[in-house]
Image 1: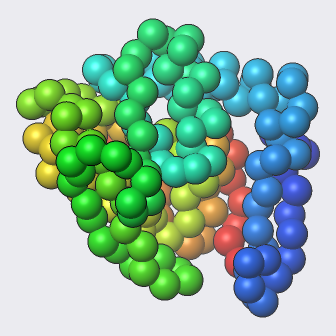
Image 2: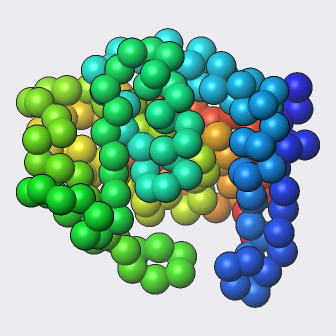
Length: 175
């Protein structure tokens, strides 16, 4: 199955000059969605990890299904002020401005190994912030798995330069 055929490309969204890669067309197709989850599960078997974390919000779609199949705890990495208890926070820069992600302080035990799943990597700012957030929590990043890599925006390469393991299912050029 060519998963690229299930990704809708929307020009000039969310701003002029951006070609947005929309996963809603993939997740509404049960065969394509099942294929993605199966591929993530298969790729995850390369890594030793205790927990799965996902970046808000589209990462939740994929990571929750993988967590269920692998019977691993699922940890939410959320936008600022979305978690009700004590949190660790990381501020970071995006292509479109600044953002903050948070995790509950009690989400990880010391030396937990964490698989991070997200729908897409572009420049890698959010993924790098997620890794720093996990490390701030005294856990370690086992690997990243992305559905889509926008290969020419360099995010995947930047994570690899920092010695993180990175996998993806499909690739598109960025802008």
